[in-house]
Amino acid sequence: MQITLATPSRGKFALMLIAGLLLAGVVAPQAIRAQRAAAPPVAQVGLGAPLPVYVVNEARPSLPDGFVPGTSWKFTTWTVPTTLTFSATVEKTSGGWAYLTVEANASRASKWYYVPQMPGGWEKL
Image (cartoon, rainbow, N blue to C red):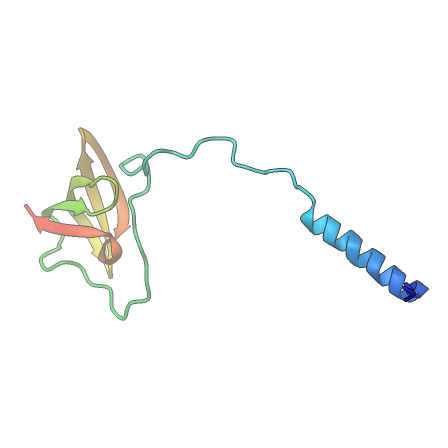
């Protein structure tokens, strides 16, 4: 019995060479590009950082009943890993927006907030 090996033509050889190079490029080890600085351990939420607001398409934005200028409210989030509680006085309202004077941890700030999509609950004081 005689064994004969067929040699590939130049075209097949070129295709096998290109396929081998492509495979070597895909399989070759790559440099790891990782984040160098550590991520913050918890979300930064408070008067110095934006409050968590989730906006979705909604037909009509609405404020809690009685959410009118001059009233005071307590807000508590249900964000993880901790909750955030602050009190706010309503200064102005427009649609789902309210200009609130927020007080938390002996700090005070006034800003516009989109109230309908704030993740938490409002309780009138």
